[in-house]
Image (cartoon, rainbow, N blue to C red):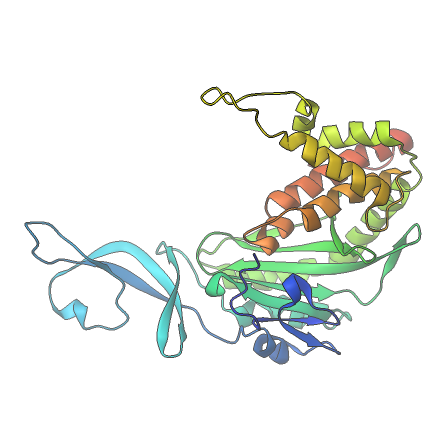
Length: 350
């Protein structure tokens, strides 16, 4: 389930992600072109909400979100103390969220600002951008000018920005890496790395300005993470070691093969942990780009499971910032533990 705003509300350079939807470009777009191609060139509005009072057996009924001043003159409206965010499409409002008075809108064009002012000048290019859930959430992905190698694997560094217009998340920007052979997204997770979160409260635009100054550190952080990933290729692993690694990342896997029954029906419960383990082991020995003989392959068995074997209602949020991101960070941390035990020099972060 892709939940893209519509089948064309995104673009991608050189490939068609997300169930073959969106516009494919031969060359990267400018900021103005990116906004138009991703259909993000609309504005978000914020307006106070009210309850409209009408007699109905002594009760107040009808919750409305007015978009003009007509109802305000009736004397029958009560402020809720909250606001709605919305955009206009075909002369009609599309409700995005219900937020507090402190919530500050960050327009899509403003979210592109750090990319436009810093990353594009450093040689980065827009790779993809788009919206999901009728525009409630938007993302931007910019690709670094140079790739790197982990063993024989080509990897591409990126910077990812995720923003919501419904109050569900902060503005989040972080570096990430994509393993080209399998299109897995990898976490950049060293102590010197960063993930910036900016809450949608007063001053969000000023703090976004300050964020541009922090972007200069991204290349050094990616280089250090690539060093750790290369060390993963030097740590040999068989099925037994990989199994122990998987269990450390997914502790519930130790319960696989244990039969349980529903206390009401007496029916045998599905063994979900065995299914997860089987998929991880398959990914390890025969996954995309994997051959089943080192820590790098075990790590990517997990990233492949998260990115390609699971189903999500909101792929970008989960894989980039939610459950999927946490699992991949745990996998990197555990792998870095093994690297650190071997080298005694690499620090990691939870």
